[in-house]
Image 1: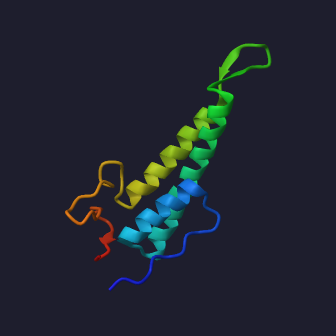
Image 2: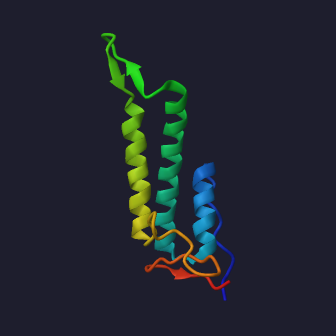
Length: 117
């Protein structure tokens, strides 16, 4: 029998909270899984914050000599998304594996035990 999901860390933003809630509801997570999940969710929040600024400011900036340069937040967003995906892979959840796999909509992640619903 499943205990209630762990509380969502207060420091997470909207995107991180949504991801945390989704995964914590479907899997029984050990403390080391929770630490990895927190890393993934925090990285997702960072990537989303970068995306908001990039949407507002554009993908390029004007350099000190007037040349158009790639916005430095593009690299920060890419690094944060990579960190999020790496953490999800450590949990056995990547883009392909995070899709519902059975008739009950449960996920299939080999390193985690699925919650009985």
